[in-house]
Image 1 (cartoon, rainbow, N blue to C red):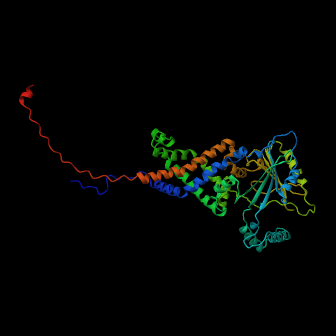
Image 2: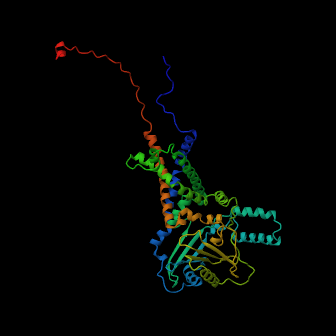
Image 3: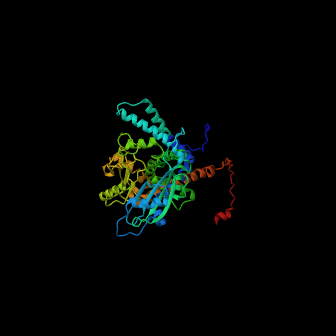
Length: 473
């Protein structure tokens, strides 16, 4: 009488919108594609957050017994350290608190990185650069040679990130006693935290290869965080659904607990992970760095120049190491509450004496940075977000200075570091719990097809005859 429907009555129609189904598909496959990279970056990030605290605990040479006398001057410490380093010349001196060891730093650039792609040595490149500077001076900045623009673009293209070996000589600032000598390099270093950082930033590959891979994976992770919130968002805000969205049912099966951990922990850590991801991408992509500054500054471009300030080279006096002492004493007098001061030692006549004043230990965003002419000690200012005093910087420059400290959580002190640690730990768990959800559906999601039910014909049951005698009873 009635025509039977051709569609399968057992097949449930999806109640999700097309948008949510597309987001779910992308969330799944992009998560599977980037999962292992996110795990590596997150785990190494967890470890690196407490680098300074762990080093303070296990490296006793970083500390000295406080004494009631003044520190030795930088020139005195450098003279002692140079004898130990045999032929090398110090590039910086760092002073900390009364119980901190002073650090005399030495940087040795790799010889093979001193040549550009055309095989020209540093000497020839410096000579070519000098000729270009002379041309600019003769033109008084009014005209620009077309060849100069070509050479500049070519030079910037062939410019590589400065890399080499940095050696720290830990010394007693009161006596000049050498406590320890430690060398660190980016490529091959016995330092554990340098190894962790290489994995965090480039997956232990060359930086030119690994860093973009990490950057793309983190971009995908940002999308996964946003799409995850879209998929998590409750359809109705009734109590039963709220409990599933905000609480983990620990008494349930492993499958349910794993599902809750992925959704609930992902929700609670999302804001922290977005901050960590956004700040991390600054080191992966130049366009991201500029775009982030453009947003925070209200549309102003980022002025980011790698060109260092220069001393006046018209002076014929030779550089005296005692000049660094004068800079340090002057800076220390102006900043009596500083947690640490680093001064740099010029290597060439055009180099400046740099001074970095750390307001808090193991915190860098509120650092003041100065540059002084090595002959006249006149302060030289350059237009970058990191130069000058922190308190005098504008808001977008302050935010840019905070980038590293936001990334590791130290902008909020030890509490912020714990927040960054647990957020990174959850970040490492999300690809794992997400994979287990997908694997569970693959393994247990498909139920065997049920056999068609056979209609059973009803058989009438004959009533048993009851004698009249029993009825009367």
